[in-house]
Structure formats: structure tokens, C-alpha cells
Image (cartoon, rainbow over the protein chains, first blue to last red):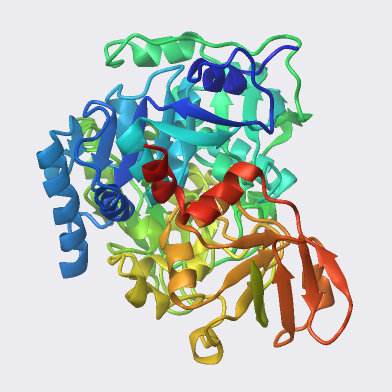
Length: 419
Length: 162
Ligand code: SF4
């Protein structure tokens, strides 16, 4: 029986000769990631279990991105806990202050994750790195503690659903729209416990930024991981970036899939997920008249330079509607600097945007852009649960940077074609 | 193990933001988190529930973020266990890793009203409605995960192996 990429990567991290979906295995991890919310609990657990040294200081990544810059005393204390641990352990990949970016934008950018890696992160959007042909999955803090201590973790081998995407994408339609469409089609538990493998001609033509957005949201369909085969686009992205040699795995032609779903992407228009589920998706032409109070462009889903370029292209010589707070969050310091060098920040400021430091901040309703009762935000983020960005009676509409930018200008959910 | 308690019912797709909103994640103190347990799903939950009570969810309970603060809040609130039609993957892991008992039952949620008492017998693999003989099977737990629960969670399990 053949194997999928996901099965092959998992197997390569065990000493087993064969594995099958459903099997419980112990596998070695290449990177174990934590942030300022999840790492403090992991550190507590690590110490309680008598942990003295992490298994490998080069294989632990600690990124203080959620409440950065520290939003209050409690969050400062959490960061202090992690910082002291990172210094004590000599953690190589420790980021805070002016070096911090949103973790899932930062790790690929710095080449810390490479194809064939097995990555666990105490953050659900760790699945982002599947775009690079790595097996990456979100876990909890206790898992992180166990991984930091032993370098291994238990996994249930997932079944894989294959998505075959074909057709040429229309103007303003991006990877974000594709993944929203897919989640809308299969539901928020449509891939529960499973791997989502993205293939097909549309995927081959898709830039890395779009693939990262898609893999990022695999968790929003309940998936364990999302994965893309390594191709010329991946290799080009890794050039001058990859911090170590990498291994490429390909799904066998006789691999067994739980399901194969074909998607005709040529017919898609920009998509929006309405409150309060990422699966509550409709095309922008069916959005109706939804007035917005805020437009958030950023996050690990869509805070990359490519996203900011698209937003700037739309916002150039335009202004956000007077009642709209436009917030732009470059996801990493490098992206911030690029945006500055390319003049994008001027365009945003001319459009009366607030430019936030790289931070998770508003995306999780932490700080730097909280919604009041009854307010609505269009956001390029990945979750629109009740209370996600603020008051339990506020609303979040998930969309691409193009839609978020156009909506900011028109003050309502809108397609760039309406400008 | 036997769990006996009143059930508090919640619908499908109860996400971790509803279980413990991100605005409270600037601490990991269990007692602090417990105060806000289920707050955005039912603002009065903590006022109504009694220690030993049971949370009854629908499909995909615990979806969303990986925050272990969610099972921690539930456990620290005194909830004895969670029963749902299905659990989101990371919540499922977290619950076993930290020793919060959770059980999958496809039919219970549609057959019992809020406030009713149920008895869960995890060894026999059945749930009974108190005062009736109606029973509901629960999905068996793989032996490895049973071991995790018996050892009191993943870290204690690892310590024991060493
Ligand atoms: S940007 Fe949002 S979704 Fe991404 S890691 Fe930060 S809080 Fe999570």
C-alpha cells in the first residue's frame, strides 16, 4: 500500500517500518514552538516533571508575539517567565521586542522550518508550515512540555483528504478565498483529525504566500495538518533562507485517501466568512449591505508583504471611509521594513490607516484593535468566533486583503471591483 | 471510574474562545481562569454550576485555538468531565494530556435535557440517565490514552516511564 506525504514524514520520524492511519505512534520532533500564552504553562509543566535541560536548544522556538508589546502587567509577567527560561536554556530561536513577528510568519521567513520537518507548536495555526512540505500541527502546552523534555511526542496517524484544485483564478481571488471556499464546503469539522493535502494545477501555480494562507486555515476545518508537495515555488522560497538541509517527500500514486474532493476554482469570486464560523462562507456578490467599523489587514494568515502589496494597490490615492478604523499589521519586522522601503506605509498612512507593530494583538482580541458591542470588523485573519476580536456582541467577517482594503474604502463589505 | 452529575448542555462547535475568551489569557492561574469558564457561551454558567457537574456538548467541542487554558478552566471550575458528540483534535489531546476525562457519545446530547442527572461508567463504557434504565454507549478509549488518564496526564506518564 502506498503512502501520503503526511504518512511518510511521520514514519520517517519513528523507527517503524510501516505505519497506517489510526495508529498511535511516538515520533521525534524537529521543532517545538511556544508563545507568550502557551509557553508559560509548558515551562511550569516542564519544571514540575523535573525537567532541567531541553532536549535540543536549537529545536525549540519561543516567540513572544501574542500580547506584544506587553499589554498589561500580567502579560509582561508571562513574557518574563518565557524570557528567563529562554536565557537559562540558551534557546537559539527566541524572539521578542524588535525582533518579534507573528510566529507563523516568522518561522518560515527565517528558514527555521524546512520541508520534511516534523513540527509541533503550542498554537493551533502551527499547521501553516504544511505549505513548505513539512508535517506541522498544533498541540497544547503539556505536549510542548513533553516535546521540550524528550524530543518526542505521541501522534495518531491521520487519514488524508486530497483536494484537487483546477481552473485559473479570477482577478482578486487568492489562496485565502480558496481556503475559505473549501471550509465553507466541508464545514468546520469537515477534516476533523485528518490531513488536508492540496494538489492540482491551481495549487502548482499558487505563490508561496497564498499556500501559507491556505495551510494556515486547515485547522479551521478541524484538520490535524494541511500539506503541499514541494515544487519549484517551494525551492525558490527556501533559497538563501533554509537553515538546514531538507528532505522532499511525495505522495505515492497508490496512496490511500479518505476522500478526494475536486474544486473548480475558475468560477470563484472573492469569499467572505460571516459571523460566527469560518465555514459560514459566501461569495462577495452575495454579501449584501454590511456596514463595517473596522478593517484589519494582518495576522499569520495574511500579514505578509504580498498581502500588504495587494492592499496598497487598492488603497493608493484613496482613503478609508470616515467611520472605518483601518489597521495594518505587518507580520514581521522584515515585512515592516520592506513595506517601508517600497513606500507602502506611506500609502497606508495616506489612507488614514493605523500601522501596528508586528503582533497578534487584535487578531485574538488581545489588544491593539478591540471591537465594542455591536461593532463589525472585516479582517484578513482566520477566526470569527463569538467574541474573537472583542465584545461578545461584536462581529468578524473573514476575507482577503483585497476585500478588506476595498471594504475599508467603501465602509461596507465590498469587492475591489466596486471601486 | 464513575461520574455522576447534572448536565449543562451546549450546542455544536463550542470553540475555545467561548470556553475561555482570549481577554483572560494574560494569566494561566487555574483559579483565575475558572472564574470565566464558558463565559462567552453562557455568561451565568459559573453561577449555576456545582462541582461535579458535567458539560454536555454537541459536535466538534473545543474547536479553535490550542489553548490548554480551556480544559484547565473546565477542570478548575470543578466540572467532573465533558461528554460531547465529537471533540476537536487539539482539545481532545489536551484533555488527556492534563487528565480531564472526556467521553464521546453520539446520542446522549439529543436525549437528555439540561439539569438532568447522568451516571457515566467509564469501565463498562455506558452512560445511564439517572432514575431510568436508558443507556448510551460511549466510544472506547484506546489503551494508551487510558494509561495517560490513569497516570494523571502526559507529564506524569513520562516521569513514570523514565
Ligand atoms: S495572528 Fe492570530 S491566528 Fe495567528 S498566531 Fe496570532 S493570534 Fe493566532
